[in-house]
Amino acid sequence: MNANALPSTPAATPPLHTVPSATPPVVAPSRWPRRAFLRAGATVVLTATLLEPWRNSRAHAASTGDRSRSLDMRLGGRDLVVQPVLMYNLPQRQPARSWRNWGGLQTQAAVDEEVARIDQEAKELVRTAGFGLQLQPLAKVTNPAEAAALRDSPADTLLVYAAGSGTETLQALAASGKRLLIFVRYKSGPYYLWHEIVDSRFLRNHTDQVQQPNVGLDDVVVDESAELRWRLQALYGLKNTLGRRIVCVGGPGGWSWPKAPELARERFQLDMIDLPIPELNAKIEASRKDAPLMARCQREAQQYVQAAGVKLDTTPQAVQDAFLLKHLFHDLMNQADAFAVTVRGCMASYAGIMPCLTLTLVNDDGYMAYCEGDFVVIPSGILLHFIAGKPTYFCNPTYPHQGRMMFAHCTAPRRMDGRTLEPANLVTHYESDHGAATHVHFRKGQLLTIVKPDFEAKHWLALTGKILDTPFTDTCRAQVEVELNADTHDVLRNLRGFHCMLAYGDYTRELAYAAHKVGIQVQVLRS
Image (cartoon, rainbow, N blue to C red):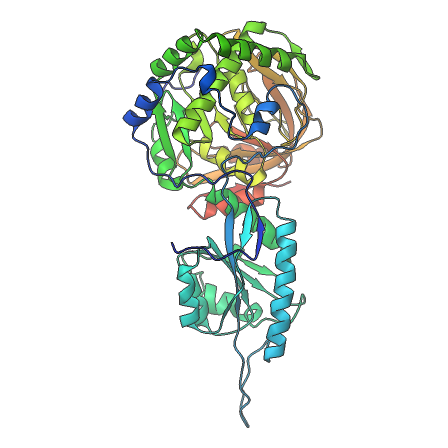
């Protein structure tokens, strides 16, 4: 934590192919009035009768020391629903004049073969997705009226196989109110007309600039189904960020930028549930009188400390307190039907508990937990979390030099790859020298995504780097030194905002694609 932080539709038809979500879908966000939220929480004392199994029982086991488990790291995620559309028309021969456009779908037999080809490709797309994906039965569209009927599809995205038909048909699909992906064939099957004209006739509409308000150059894919997959993964991440509900202990804020919550609502429609710190403190004090709960926290803390890869360099009581706060955070998220929490004003502790280790535990369970209530950067963490299916590390940057950059905070997740708990020393929170926090031994040589949002929610910086070391200097406890895959001076010239988000792997293209859909330009720097 940083001492300078401010306290400051119609019924769906059965899907053709499905990778189901592992958890029930999030209720569509409709703000829970703050007073009702607090009233529900104020009457609750955590007793043994309230300690129901969490929404994902595997997550409970994760935080008690099992180093490697198969977990759902996208808790609360809703499947991306995609409607495949074959757009075509069958020409009629006419004597002594041109009667057909470019393209290989000239007969019904060719159309039938293409339907079977798309079906097989769809099965493979779902099989390799790695995220919640549903594909509706293929729709065949030959004219604008048939295209307009897809407004009633339950899909989030139309995946248009643009083999033929006219511009008016594609325009009608674009006007459906759904996101549009356009796939055209060059060599992967019968030639598609729109491989020739998608740019000039549709995107630029017979001008020199892209004219489509909701479809751009990156929404067109030629031949490669793998290019569809990462775009769908990005759209899955965006769907699960928009309208996301998050419990805000101490209220939402922004590091040196009071407009941040307003901008996060504007860009991502985040639903921020305010929980005043005195309310949390009262819950903590009440819970300390609950003997069964305290015994449970003690057992869980002991299991965690005794697990392989953990070294205790703080007090056992501090770890037990972290598990107590974790139970409270899970209860608060359950009450709010939320899967994310952020804390603010915690430098003075919450009834004596520093939340650092608690945030680590919650992130390692597959939820989202962020320090400082900083909505300059929290939207990027939520988006990256759902794209990657891995925890995201909210951290402070340092000054880049000689191709390197160090990042640090006291709240690092350990399950950074989504499966395995990295080794860690359990130490105190740095600024207070109190409580429990993690010094994570991040995996050396691991590729990282680094996201640095700007204050105005207009331009994010994204790059990758390789972990060189996990030093232990006089800074926030979880330190990671990164060799940047970008020129140092390019990084310096494009630094924006303050806090960063890190994730294992390279998700820069998915992040840039998704953020562009809500009006944020992501500058991706590469070496």
